[in-house]
Image: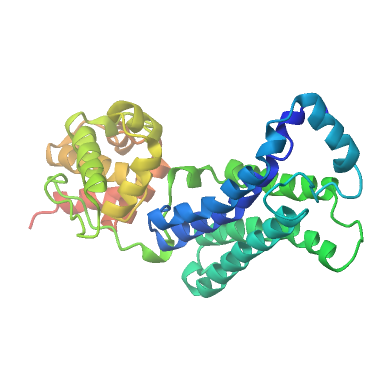
Length: 332
């Protein structure tokens, strides 16, 4: 802090925002609503007030700031800054703690009220999401609650070290969660909301059933990516990923995945496999089963291995590929 004095006193600005932003994030995850609304701009007020309160300090030279840091921030009163010119000494620290606690309580309330929606005991994906949200809420609480000991005593339980450890746990834990669950980077849906996937037809583009609740941008994305995959037969590329689709269409991954979930009530892999299964049906109609093995046809349709093909086909059609071919060859 002494070496980089110009960064001092800026921590409060972000500290006032971290819990409210997490609260908005949690609302978006659970209620699937837009993260920001105009009234949410009011959440910026504490940070703006903090900046104005410490503005004279921010205008000081680096040497002057270093002297202040050495005099108070490295000792017992390292959180109770004395440079505010609008509000009393120590006000920003206590106001920040109360502000953060309010939003942590709101986060806990959301998790509790929606515990049945999450159905963490019935769905592995939902369980992972619930654990992730609960983990961040708990670690945020550990970073906030110890500070309240300053209200009742002078016990030095809340130090810079404790603060750094609790915040680091939150960041490292989030990183590990996303490392082992990278699919959540591309969007997700609550598994209890999934409806059975209907067998695909030969006219996927015309038969997309877009709900009235889907906004115009999502509708456009759904039609655009479906047209691209269908007309260019992108699904024939083995291992074709959502990142590949993003490059081919110029639409960011974070928009593609939620659009597929909203329009088709499924994820990207299941969605792209529907095109491949439709292609399989067309090849069977043309008699390719007399020229190629089942594995050969599956490969020609874009499937990378037999197990994935059989699993995806059975999930959509309700029968194995072999049984489907046999049924197609059986005279009516």
